[in-house]
Image (cartoon, rainbow, N blue to C red; front, side, top):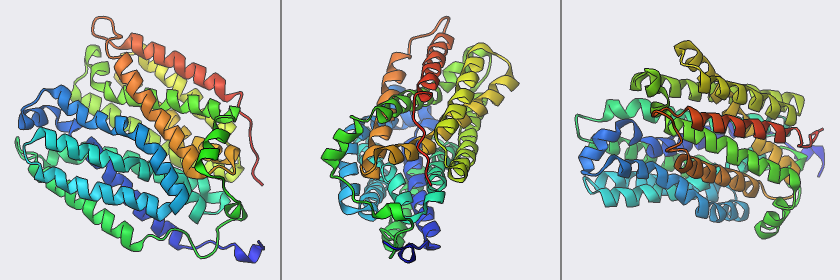
Length: 401
């Protein structure tokens, strides 16, 4: 294909924005019960453990559905794949309201929403490849992933405000309407791809998903990346899950835990912007992954050992910066080193193993504490991050000209 057939369209930013709105809505639906855990337990007349299950169900469902989601995105394109996720979230997000006080129905509808998440998250790199030129791809992926953190932050912030006394229904109705609106906007306005490709790499022939999976797991660099996502996302999910239990033995309350969690997310947002931009500007992945994981490893070691308020907050921010900024760089690195495997296949496998890591670590480290303090669990995770950092040095840099 000649250079004249390669063109970049301003509409790419509209597509990215609408995708972000759907992802933000998805994350709000996921996190909506966590900030009002005790209220939700009283409202549905169940133990708080069952409220935790509402969020955990997303991680469990992600694992088997990711294969179907990756196949659909690769086979039918970005709009149909991500659009199906938007439709699922819109429908089940509204149905949660109509479950009223029936916990089992709410759990069923929550699982329904969770079915849609892989169709959204696995489409991130497909969106970037379809609409953005090579020198903007990681930036687009980073911005798309930022919407995930924004959704979690908004859900944590808005839910306590929207819950009226002990009644969750106003909150559930508002979130259901939001999910329905973002679904409609996505379906109506988003296009699968522009009339002409944004880069010459876009036109490369892709392999089928079954062959792609074989290629992925015969690629030693992808296997190393697979381990990195297992450790990195698993550790982040574990720390955010147990954050209140981590700070409480050190003399801090739930407000401080919320502040620390918010700073970790803020650090992740800042890190995604900075590292994604640097990746596109300098065409490097490996060195940025080394920097991100070095920052994360040092930060977690310090968080493990300190009780100082300022140190906890500062290095909580840096931990989020390091762990989450590695996400978009790692996803685009996977696309680079596994061509012609479709983008959704590599992304889907990495996001899936991150969910597996989260589930295993959350369950494994629940009772790894001394005098009710999680520092032994944090120390083990710090060592695991150190191992992840060492693994990055064995990755091969792929220069993109």
